[in-house]
Image (cartoon, rainbow, N blue to C red; front, side, top):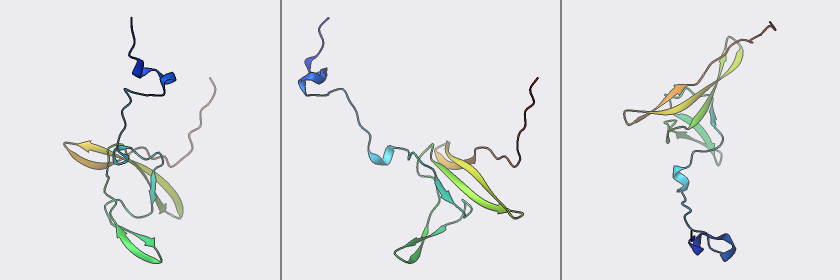
Length: 104
């Protein structure tokens, strides 16, 4: 079986590698916000506050919403999901207590 010499790294050439545009890559870290996701948030840019949409931009994108409930700061994770061609935020999981397990 003969291999294509262009696929060999020792020849200084790498082929059969495909890249994606930066716009298509999901960020590694989630965004954070304290503004409800259905509202535009204000972001400080060069000393001035500018409105910024919180609409999801790519499927699988994550955002963490920080909210103070009854004096306790909580965090709720949301993920962008494609439903019939429309990106929507969906809650991931919300825990408000501690889960204890006992040994059998």
